[in-house]
Picture 1 (cartoon, rainbow, N blue to C red):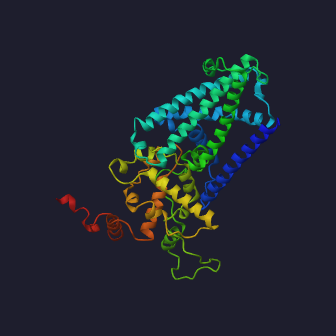
Picture 2: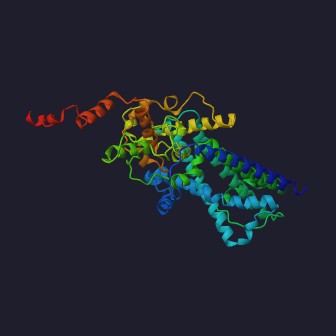
Picture 3: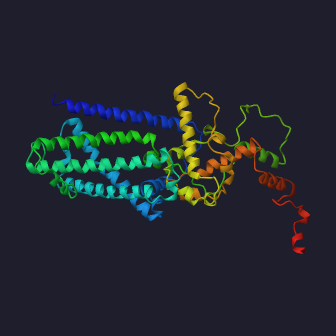
Amino acid sequence: MQYIPNIIFVIALIAGIGYFTKNIRKVIRNIRLGKDVDRTDNKKERFNNMMMIAFGQSKMVRRPIAGILHVVVYIGFVIINIEVLEIIIDGILGTHRIFAFLGGLYAFLIGSFEILALLVLVSVFIFWIRRNVVNIRRFKTLKGWPKNDGNIILYFEVVLMTLFLTMNAADLQLQTLGAEHYVKAGSYPVSQFITPLFNGMSEGTLILLERGAWWMHIIGILIFLNYLYFSKHLHILLAFPNTYYGDLRPKGQMDNLESVTKEVMLMMDPNADPFAAPAEDETEGEPEKFGASDVTDLNWVQLLNSYTCTECGRCTSECPANQTGKKLSPRKIMMDTRDRLQEVGDNIDKNGSFVDDGKQLLNDYITQEELWACTSCNACVEACPVSISPLSIILDMRRYLVMEQSAAPTDLNNMMSNIENNGAPWPFNQMDRLNWNKE
């Protein structure tokens, strides 16, 4: 009978990690639906970016208040969960505070965890105020699930940190009473102020309280782990590969389509025969699609971007088009891309392979009005704290509209016609360009 708690713990641990693994494999499968792109160059620079941006939170602190609070929550949550390793070992082996033999180091670690837990609670409270009372514009525009998701995560943090401190407080009281199995170990600078609430409780009640908080804490962590798949907070994991595989080229540099490049090179080669038959080793396949109309036309890094989006709204708050009342929101571009990708993934899960559902990212999720409102200024790319590029998706979809559907706005068509006919964007003959200086 004494091994029943251990068995239950192992079953819960396997179930939690197994379900998480299953969902993460879906995410990886969905990301791989994108076109291939090579991001294996400059490994040192990529690693440095990952350490500075994802691990070091360098872009978060550009907005000091939100940035510092986020760093506190991030560091606190990561470091405190080192303690989860001890909980897992104790749960499997039936031990209690197995690392207590570390003595002074253990006391320092537990004390640090408690101080960080308190700082996390304070930060989460301020975050909640910012989201629900102050009503900052970039949060106020979120409705429905995106708004609720942000609050749910905050509630998760409060519950987990409270359980952690309650567990320690009850444990400290049991240590003081000399309860069997509760060795005197650790330093409790925060939970020691909670223990007076437990004065007068029997040893059995305290054990029930400590064990209850212990079980709820680890089960809560497993629930939180699996909640990530359904939440924007998947960025906790994906921010690292996303910053590593980010685009290292200068902002504003566009990629050229290989087929178009070959065509231009052929036109510029004075020795090329435009009427020559294709080489024997060249096989004609399905013509390459210009640009993107659906998520499968995007590359895998762009799809990784969509899953990594934190929905913080910094991109939209910096967007000049959005600031002037245009419909464009770079955050919405990323959220729509993720929603459509998830819909395609669910379609594959249901049918074994993708079955045309009559929908696509363009028009069904993202309108042409949004795409053409973009000024291509890269403000959204610069503002993103995890190196996401909404602009790359916008440009690929605009490329599709122009090159596949000839659906560019009238002004843009006029400009391109002028460039073709006059060698400049203006509707003047080359001989008349300097007439303005005679007026």
